[in-house]
Structures are given as structure tokens and as C-alpha cells.
Length: 180
Image 1 (spheres, rainbow, N blue to C red):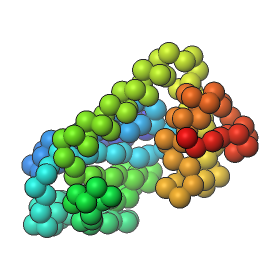
Image 2 (image 1 turned 180 degrees about the vertical axis):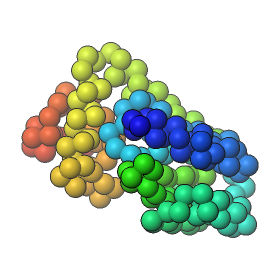
Image 3 (image 1 turned 45 degrees about the horizontal axis):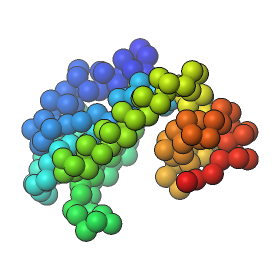
């Protein structure tokens, strides 16, 4: 199974999207939405401004029973805009491949901004030949060097480097990348 087929298996055959629909409107974002998956990762934002601990517990039970995660986290937090946001993240094996799935419960406007960002990246990639291959290659190289994480380099850094600074390889990235 390809990475994309495994993602579809998680979303549809394992009924994750169907279950998430009980808690709001799910929106797939990130590299799956943009067709630029470099590793086994799904990001889903769920439109739900009234999430509760009871809902979190019910969804947790589904995730634990269905996916038997090797790592699991669920939390409520206050973001920088003083809004309550909910997060559930887990790792599980699909076809002997480790997958990371992140679920965020946001308001409609926050999700729209994330979708707009993804759509902007998709447009830029279409306008710049070979950029998709450079993005995927750069992500994979950073992953292999264990440098692709929240506290080092993120996908936003990679998109910015390739699409705006025209960096196409990891050596140039590590020497020349500037965060805007």
C-alpha cells in the first residue's frame, strides 16, 4: 500500500472521518490535502466551537479501541488568543508503518485560515516547476536527520525555503534558510 492508500485506509476504512463527523465538521489539512506527503502523518481540523470533556472522552475511547495507539495524548488548552482549543494526537501502526495523526478542534475561521494557507501553497507549487519534488525531498532529508520537528524545522519552513527562497536541497537549506 502506498502512503496515500494507507492514509485513505485510516480515514475511510477505519472510519476515522465518519467518527469525527459526530463531533463537528472534519477538514483534512496539511500535506495530505496538498498531495505532498513525505512521511506518515495526517492532520485534521474539526470545526467544533463547543467541544467538551465528555466528547473528548468518547472520541478517546474510539481512537484507543480502533487504533490501539502506541502513543496517545488528549488535552484542552488556552491558545495565544485566549481561546480554548482541544487536541488529540496519537501514533499507531498501519501495515507495519508508524503513523502520526493530529486532531485539532477549532472554530470555523481558524480552519479557514489553515485551508487558505494550504491552497496558497498548492497554487505556488503549480507555478514553480519541480517545487513539489524539492519540498518532499527536503522534508524526507530533514526527517532522516531527525531535524523535522516543532522545535527545529517544520513544513512551513520547508515551504518557505523552496517556494520563496528557491532552496532545493538540504545542504543549502541548512546554510542559507532564513525564517521570515
